[in-house]
Image: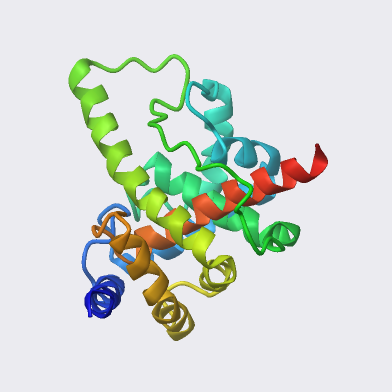
Length: 228
């Protein structure tokens, strides 16, 4: 009974993004914002695949140089984006992860991530060397990181429980019936993760982002284990 209630809650959360509520990607209409972010990611992965990969798997204590950060946010890829959304760095990481995952089809072959230890979602901001923030700004960054990484942990739980289902979502076009159907199929898995203690505070947009980021990192870790 409890799981059935949680599954219903998951479906309601998933539907909220489609209903036009704030999705966490700036303040553009949700559909416009999601498409703009996706276009930015594909453009950047085509131009800077190695740097995009490094940014996506950035771990605690690692930072990009200002020049590297500038390359990842090249005006040629942002020209259609900046007027439409206030992009957060975690969102750009997740969008790049999804683009890399779809491009690198070999990373989609994993059927289990059981050999990979739990991912470290410790806060990583600020991402760029030489950034100076006052105490209040650092506090805001830490709070934002904490919220984002709760979603990432949920995404990791879902990706571990159903890798094929997670990839199925990521292969769909955004804001389509196919995406909604894939999320509906995943709802019991998501509900189980929530029941196990993961956050309930999510919508379809940020959960897709969390799954993309978690799945990519898990797949990279699995591939690295195979090379040892």
